[in-house]
Image (cartoon, rainbow, N blue to C red; front, top):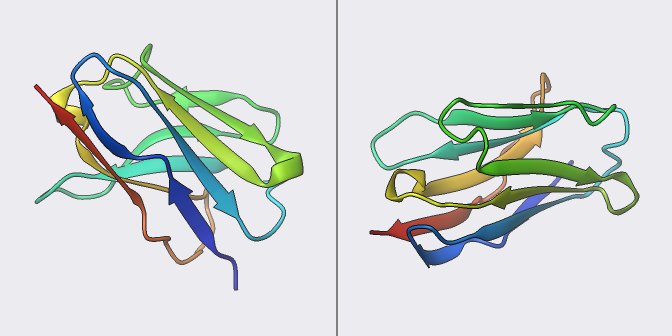
Length: 113
């Protein structure tokens, strides 16, 4: 079974930065991947995607602040988050796009004002 392990979250002040990593237990080479987040009391939302050709898309709320990238040799997807805001506080998850892969445990990001 495919495993997704997110890491890199933490507590940061508004305006700060974090870099999240998602290690995948199998090859991600030809798959589109995405980062999602779920804030308390809210539904999980898609934040950023990257396809096999490294084309990216972002939610309007993070455009210009977050950057998704991938290292296929390491089967790892990254999310660089800059200029963080309190409303970015959430548990962040990665997953394959368009496939029913069980979610990992996520990584908590807390942004203080």
